[in-house]
Length: 166
Image (tube, rainbow, N blue to C red; front, side):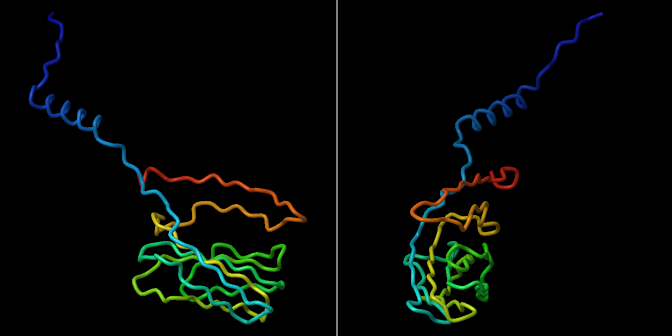
């Protein structure tokens, strides 16, 4: 009985080896880095029923817009039309909320947010580039509590699901 010896089809083997060589020299796939585009802020002074904050300079279509609002009092801050809620909760200052959306081509120069009541409030708008437009918020960590001159620094572990995006 003769021993079996493998026989390779030379053109097929050459193709497989060529593909492996290309994979070895090709750069690994990487997602774009998330970068800050700009930030603006505004306040109501002694109180108002709404606060207007300018769109961050340099914002382009596809950037993530994030607005954080802190207002005195315990009533919720209403979600602006066209925005999604990042968080909305009672905080040490009164009430805090964060809203986000992906910027479109025709964004206005400023955004006016109703506060649900006349109150002192601060609004901060920021724009971020390179954020996943389908699922822009990966992880959130907050406590809302602090006292005196110190506050606990929180951490969050983010993830990037490779099976669909690597």
